[in-house]
Length: 206
Ligand code: GRF
Image 1 (cartoon, rainbow, N blue to C red):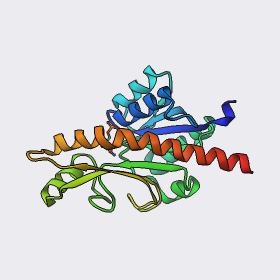
Image 2: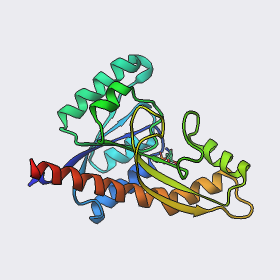
Image 3: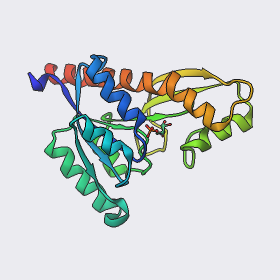
Image 4: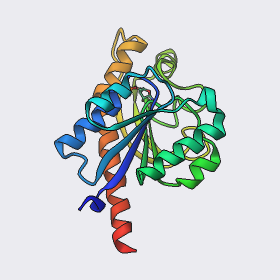
């Protein structure tokens, strides 16, 4: 029956609250078409690695600093093949993947971005900066987007979006937290489930 599920790898660089949302969603049955088999971090001290280990998921640190882009992707590919990974979820992963890599996994890599793409996205828009820019601009609504990953930063096809209202007195930190709670932690597991289900359906058709 294990083959009835898509194998998921999650790439992280930081605290891993989105990873936790994915782990919890699998436990709760919100993700029922996929199973998280591997967590990869480019940062050794990322708390996300601990979250993975606590959930009994294989957790690997691969240093891009040490290996360079090519070496990093070669090592990661080895791990993905070992675990027969079908879907890669980028959840707060702060490295750019080469176009060779994204082409190899076309429609098999998704990313969560903390704004409503095409606003406040692209190169340099990550972490708190995204929320700083939204507040600076004065938008009244922001949100989060899950999209497929291609060679253009934040440029792949959109899978899901959820809007979040900006409130009087918001700081980038307050807004970041609200966007996570009201949007990211909800739409990322839902989108992962949608993509896993379509991977399984395609597998059954062939
Ligand atoms: C999230 O805001 C995500 O949208 C962005 O980086 C942050 C990661 O947070 N790409 P966490 O590591 O999942 O807690």
